[in-house]
Length: 459
Picture 1 (cartoon, rainbow, N blue to C red):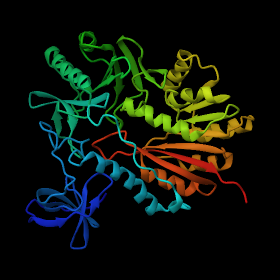
Picture 2: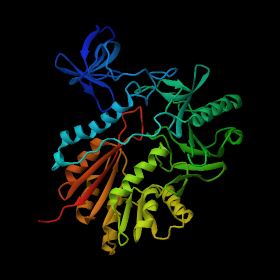
Picture 3: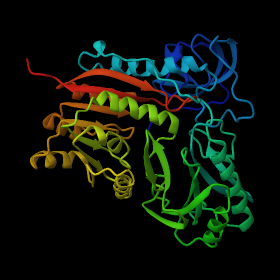
Picture 4: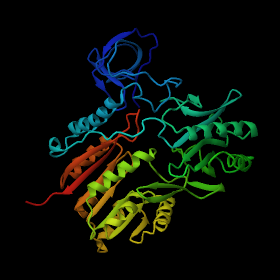
């Protein structure tokens, strides 16, 4: 654990901000040590207070701005500035796009994969809507000092901000969360207590389909038998556009938000989303991008860079509910999707049936294990698309890819650092033709990009 000292009696200091960090914080220097100041922008002179001293860096708190950047705009009115997920809301949108292109360029310079200076890194593709685009709200709930709270934790804390105004969230998901809180209070439904480790509701998840406006609600609970939970679910079903209510059961020792067991309490088994003319059923745990409109652009770019031909077999790794593979199925001979979550595989198979796709197969398992097996079975692995979590590709999988050697593949990434580290290894046998950043989450430093790789020909 990193040791640091905390001193609330620190004197104010004056700092010139040099650049933005990967989390959107302003970066400057104080006595030759780097200092991170959330809310500060490049070229600003700010008054700050040191709140944490670490061995190699400092954490600062913005007190006031002495010289303001011309790129600064007003933070949204009526919004708690301590809520997470709005780290760039004080920066003009064109500069947010520049920042996200700069993130991958800086990461390439840091890890310097082979020939990185020759990579074509395009400008960030902007989002059509920079507010109210998130169609999934995942709010935590707690009961403390005789009062319930439902909302979001302030960054790096257990302080819950009760039902915050979240301008990046769709209005319908926020309204549904508020109505659910009223019902929980009215029916005196038990709320999980992390201090005493008592059972109850821990998280309320609301997801809305952009295509149909259907709303799917999941109550994540500690413990299975929560008194009057079905009564609560029956009342939630009466809210506008709600078509289903689920219960997901987890335990205190689980570090993830979701548990492994999900049951339907009322309504439909899925909601339906639509992208590029194809329909996709989504069960509660199924991964789907949070910005439906920009997802269409993301997948269009990925398919464009795959440059598929009718005689190819496409491997869709980390397939999720089969989105990319099904969208590409019209362009190839065969699609084989690989996904580790059983429910997602079932969703992918149902989505094939829903879209009358007969040349796609989805199997459950780990990519690094199944790819060599497929090759040994004589499956021609000549095209590949990967869309891994933020941790990127495992070294074992990269080793497998370098052995299997698909001729061309596209890497969809949500983390420039892990992407670039993976490219260091992949560039042993692959050339990077293009990296296309796409702004999936405006007002945040979150990054998404599509990278086209092509197997290097032996000379």
